[in-house]
Length: 77
Image 1 (cartoon, one colour):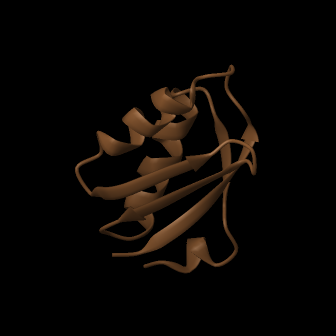
Image 2 (cartoon, one colour):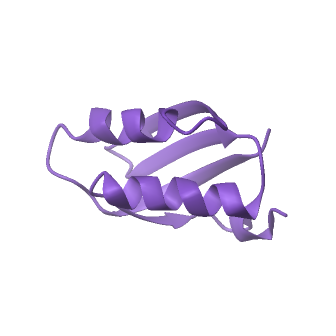
């Protein structure tokens, strides 16, 4: 199961971390989600590759958060 850390570049409104966490957990291939608002990071464990990472990013955007994947995350196949 790949792990990726996403940097929050456009944090949602205060208290929306739960919304972000729920949005990511709804994806059938996501196992674990940990949102750290103070550090501006989201850690996600998931099964899959590049396509699933794209879907994770899209789910975060729909929940009101802009994200950037950690270095090397795009190298997942």
